[in-house]
Length: 555
Image (cartoon, rainbow, N blue to C red; front, side):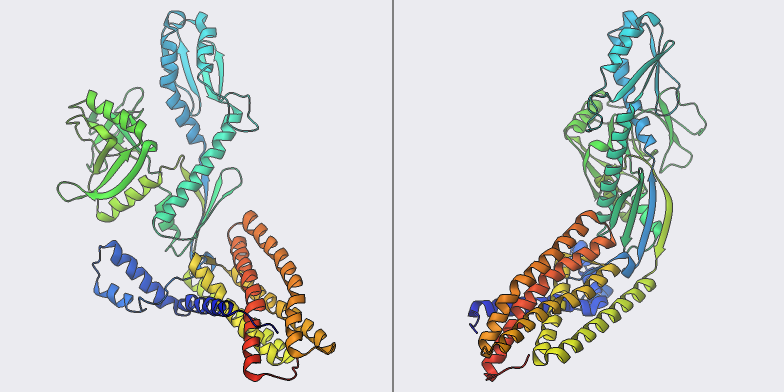
């Protein structure tokens, strides 16, 4: 048997040692997790640590690997939500924002259409009344010109607006094609914003996916309860900056047309009447960070993009001395008086915040506003006790499978079966080491993938050992029989594992949640199984040959 090159043996040994070292923290999961949480908290506090944090940090040596396999919702417990996105809210916002454009378009046609005013109408419909019906044709053309082509394959050639005439009224609403496109964009935007908000608080590997036409499924492992998750993602966090018309103590006061009456967040019994159309909105916000104001009170620094900065700067320059309302989710956080022109598009939000509240507000603003309200249809909290039972059941299943496979291999192939069992243990260490390194998530189906990998891993060894037996029957010497056995079994092993890898990749791409967890562990298991069967087992056999130098072997 042609011995492996020295560099190959060294590389195989280093990979195996790395896998064992990387997998080891998972044997002490609670201690390592407490250590990691303490390290993260100490770094966030600028190096300052409490006695409890120092004790938790000391639970695991800093010089050892500390990456862990993330546990999925079914193993760790967590929160499950099913929400319905109120896409109709977006239709209303789109048409409310369209009114100033319609009014400006009518300004050039004043001689033909006469007076123009917005008439009361249901949400999702813009109704505009003109005093001179003779100008209706010109008015319809002007309003239709405000539309654009629908940006979808099925809506090519259709306008985003549907404009009709009813007596003296122009009725504007989104076309059916645009509603469908808007629904898709709204759901996708909601998914992305929810994912950002969950990621901001350090929760890893959540399941966030669309279900049906307008529903979103959210599953987040490790979070305390469904209500905690709702508090994080259910807030719209819609920030606007509105011109203040007046201030009142009467909640039932008439705000007037195109105005809103909003409560003050920090002043009991105080209400602000503000213009409904904001000067700048949170959609033009590019950054928000927790900070402290000049009085060392918690606050939030914000910064607009180029468009928002221009609007903000122009308005503050033209309205020095006027109050300006900062509105979050239909509550006035504060209404400072504009003291001077504010160029650059940055500022600070102050209020009666705690440090935690200012941090949470910054997270929500930085992630972006949900485009529409979410109505929660189903909420469920999965306790950690259930997850612990699942882990125990999975551990028992894996140990039983490994024990049964090990006994079969030793009974069938003797010493060579023992070599295969050693390689199988290295294989398990490599799987957990790789998953820890990439931050993979282990789910209950993922444990099923590992148990399946145990059988697949020795399957490659069975092919090799059977080929060696055939060569020994042909009177080949032991060294040559082992060499030929590995050479001729390699193509069958590679073909079988390539097809399995294709299946795992398909499951990962098309699947979601637990299905992807199964695909990840199966795919990693395929790679590590080929490595241990073709390289680790052969390296062990070579070492045994060098030590014992047998004249004959029995496989």
